[in-house]
Image (cartoon, rainbow over all chains, first blue to last red; front, side, top):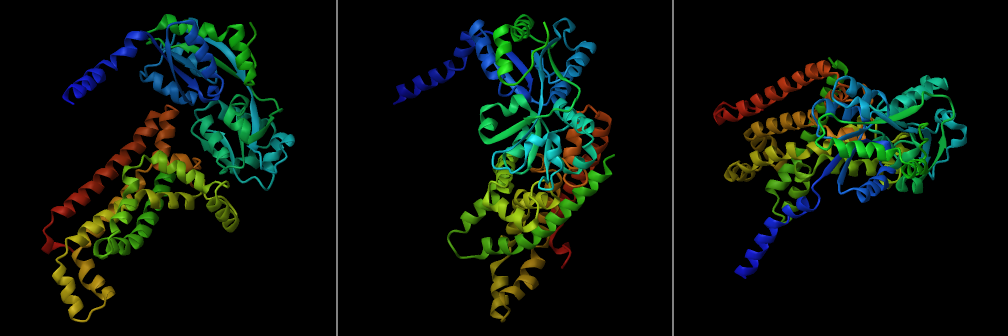
Length: 256
Length: 224
């Protein structure tokens, strides 16, 4: 009995040390939540190509922007826009030479499958009297929220839809407000609604009015402890097979 | 300064602590004085929000309020709009969230009353209700005030649940804690600091009131 307990103690002490010895390098990525569906496969492929363990945090780009400004320990920042990474580079908090477009996102109108809304009408469907709440990401700090507002303005529907807007603190939370049946429809990213959960539960229509393109850029954080690996990851995003994975989730690729 | 958010939060907390007072008096009375063996079960359920992460509560509330749940559908049909993203929705959420902060101090005060006083009142022919208002309540008024103040303060400080079911609507569901979060996210540290200072001052004042009240000798307690 005592011997068993002793062994358990020895094992418990040795366990935490074991994975550290196995994978000496860790890469921490802060990623915009529109990457939630597409990124896991890409990360897995990257981990196969190099001895590295990648951990990804998803959230709104503005949130990560603020966190990195205050010393958050990320190596790579994958934003849903170009401005945040550029501002970090300008402030000397990111390596400007690593600033790299990796994809262009698209805005869609998404509703649950049982919704009787005619999504083929595009943004005009949001003015339907049946629609009480339209979920968007918070435009104050989520690029997709800003794109949603811009698209509504471009379609001259903003004043009509504005009273119906509810805001998630990230794109993912906006999606969750619709998915749970609290909001009737959401202005989300195509990449998110093509993910397994939302794909099974709802239908979407592309937003066709002209809105500023959602160009997404990544950058290596200056304080990164693994700058070489971080650089390698950004380069990995531009590889052909990675690009095809991004396209599979509805992203367009930047011109080479 | 987010006066709109401050006013909204004050209204929310006042309504919630008012309703909780009405709920908590009979509930605490039953928990403390009932002879049933399963009062501890009710006590545990009431105290759940103390230990549950707000995200768990927020998640369940979001699911319950949505049109996919029977409760959400019945409410939507009756009220004509979903419960989430409304002020009433926040009131309902906060009632769950702050319930233990009202019930526990009141129940503690009730349990410290000398049983012979209640028995004497009953022997003299007073009904339970009369005994409650003439004996129990005056003797536990400090606990009752603490319950109201703490549930008010706890509702003011609510964040995770509101973030999950509120939808961040200015003047409707954007409470002070959400407004501060928004400012910080948008790097408006100046605005965040101003509002945060108001919260800090408020929280300190509440604690001063609660602990100041507790130090006072029983004889000097205000009578109802």
